[in-house]
Length: 295
Length: 295
Image (cartoon, rainbow over all chains, first blue to last red; front, side, top):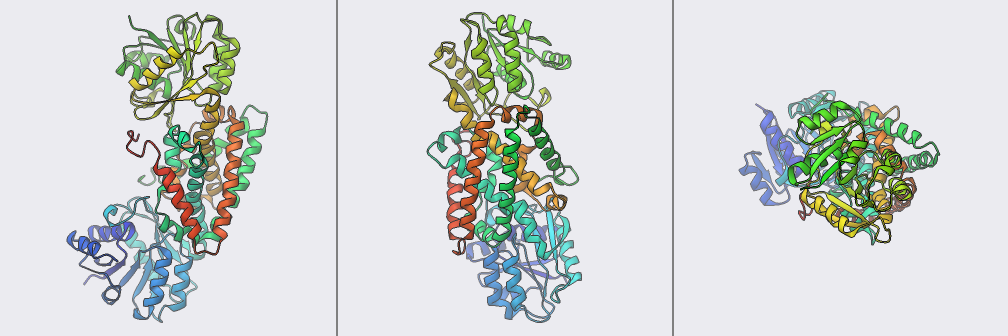
């Protein structure tokens, strides 16, 4: 009989994973949500077999437990419930910053319980079960975090979770768990802050309102992520702040370089070369090259 | 009988303006393009009554001449052809950076010829007549640049060009011509460079290719404009570089502020406040609030 996946948190990611597993795999799915309405909605939608506003029954009834709450919340909740996990049971999570959750798991996971972390690179500036959908993962990256040195890690489970990613339409990447947060700081967390910074510099002062009227599609897209949920991004970015600060320092260094380029009396030739280089790098983004579907 | 608008340059902006004027106004439209194929295509599409690979006949046959080439090219071309303009004839342009073109016009415009500059805030990272379309201006801003002190400026013509913008579906903003480039540096040119900078910092080193694989929709959108035509953006940004450098300096200052926020031992409370503020500012973008159609 098919395994049961228990998803803790039925927001955008958890809800979408539940819907995708239901639609594209044989897994049984059960869920936990803080609010009863969300549990009811998920049951009514036929997305989960059962849903609870407590985590105990979910852990009790699941072979694979997926923590889908914000990173620090996941960490706190795991620490509280670690004693409930059984040998052979699988713990995973889908958050975008791993450091705090991984520390919590390694410090209190029971002997024999397996932990392999996963990061589906999908999201939206909107959150909540209402906006979750079964195709959120289609064409996006699905990172399986490797920690071969750890005895709670299982190569077999890593392969099973990779297969789960493929089943919901993602392209799989295996990344070392300790390198993951540094990479994500550079492609997600620091960019998110840059969008917020750009928004405040351009729109935050007394001329901001007029400037916003004078902005267009470029500004809209550059700053889209700044519309994300502050409470969630606070946990992601703050939990990875050392890498994020390093990323911001690299941006500062590069801004200096660009200011020098702009100061050259070469009619913009060096600037054009710089823009060419950026365009070339961006042109290789896997989800633009048709190598995979752009979402 | 209806006036004739002559559009110099039938690329994304010029071509779209030609198509929009044809579709939504009574103006006759004629065009200039460097390449004969583009002239032929525009005639075949019924977008222009006539099109030439020389500007002389266009100036000869137009009541309103719209310079739609990159800013410095517009400036060079105007200087070469200024002597051809007649009293009462109207010169305008649609570029995103005004300083160089305005200087060229004011230094050589014949007595009696009228100049009112316009900036339709529409664009795309793609260029060329092939991608131009009649609805490019729908719901976007259309800035009419005021220079009431100048004797080549005409309030009546400014109103006519504003009406032209309304006719093609834009919302009109009147902005002082000398303030324009500073505003645009902050909402368009500096953000464009930030996207290029982010692309190179995240994707330009030996780990860049892996990082790009780990990036997702947020990174894609933050960097979209970095896919823009380097030769065009070189002219726009370099022509406005003093304002752009000022914008980059403000970003540097704000990055320092954010690094301090990240360094506070407050579990991210100040970070959340910062993100809230950015989200609030961005939420007021006129083309997001439903105040006008999002493009």
